[in-house]
Image (cartoon, rainbow, N blue to C red; front, side, top):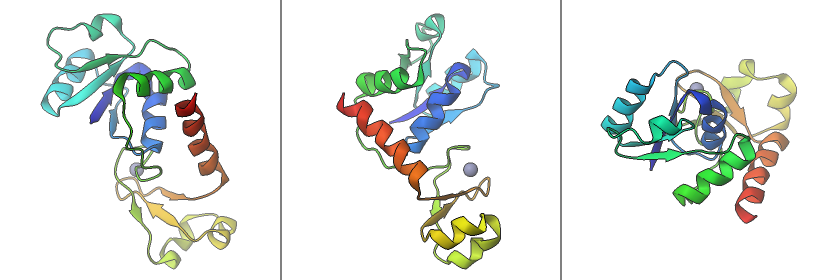
Length: 151
Ligand SMILES: [Zn+2]
């Protein structure tokens, strides 16, 4: 299951990527572009726009009715029944799959020294170069999902 989010749902797209879900997002996409990409790439369109949600050209679309991110996430999982969460495997910024850093010393210059010394598991996005690591922030984000899904 792959997705594309409309311009209103940038925050939701980022949160879904944290859970490893494939969500395209570009704040310059207009309605026509969203329809074309959704259909061509078989991506379910996530939209806040009621008019766009009933566009006859669309093959698969989900209307996100909530405005707050927590409720949007909950609504997403209720409507998609998506279950294969794979945390911290995808770049939050560009949706690329992350690669695990095997030789830690190679990224030494790219992360804060304290982070380098206190962490062993890093992953890198080969598209934007951003480096991610496991830490309390990550755990908090994961917990947020677990709470949402249990409720
Ligand atoms: Zn990236």
